[in-house]
Amino acid sequence: MQLAETFAQMDAFLERSLLRPDPVLQAIAENSAKAGLVPHAVTPLQAEFLAFLIRISGARRVLEIGCLGGYSAVAMARALPDGGSLLTTEIDTRTARVAQANIDQSGFGERIDLQIGPAMEALERAHAAGAVFDFVFIDADKVNHRNYLEKALQMARPGTLIVADNIVRGGDVLDAQSRENSVLGVRQMFAYAETLDGVEMTALQTVGAKGYDGMALFRVSQ
Ligand code: DHB
Ligand code: MG
Image 1 (cartoon, rainbow, N blue to C red):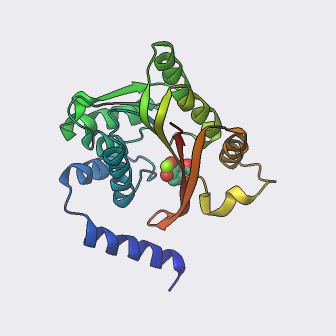
Image 2 (image 1 turned 90 degrees about the horizontal axis):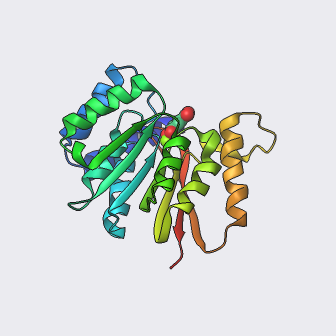
């Protein structure tokens, strides 16, 4: 059996064993697929991993950079305590319409502020307004991974957790000669990470239904 197939089957096995039926997220996945969105949302197990981190850390103010169909936004908003809020950004207007409908349908819409337009513009607006976040999920265009991390750190407090998605990309990130913009963006993020002080950092390589990838984790020291 191909390894990729084993990864996908193992993902399905873990999902069946550990997750309960989730009509809310399932509806979002189905609507997103029907609307023709790219299949880049986090997997159900990854969504629960993000929800875990939010619950463990006690985060109340979440920033998501890159909304797509709203799958991870709803998974994270649902993990928040009452009074929690999540700001998410989506550059593509049609995608944002699908996401907003999914968010409205989820029952967690009042916790979620979806801003349409380039993520960096939304981040600059939030920063100018004095926003501070307890938890950040970076999952937009990988070209700007480094810039998003920098901006997230500017809106962090001691203890803020930042998760950056897609930091392995099948191992393509190893290629220092790569001309692929997303690989360059991720490599720039790691070069930037080398310069950081006062930030605890680690990474998880992941395999599963979405192949071989990973997440980097950052925590501002207290
Ligand atoms: C891609 C983007 C993602 O955020 C992801 O989780 C998987 C793939 C992509 O651009 O290929
Ligand atoms: Mg991603």
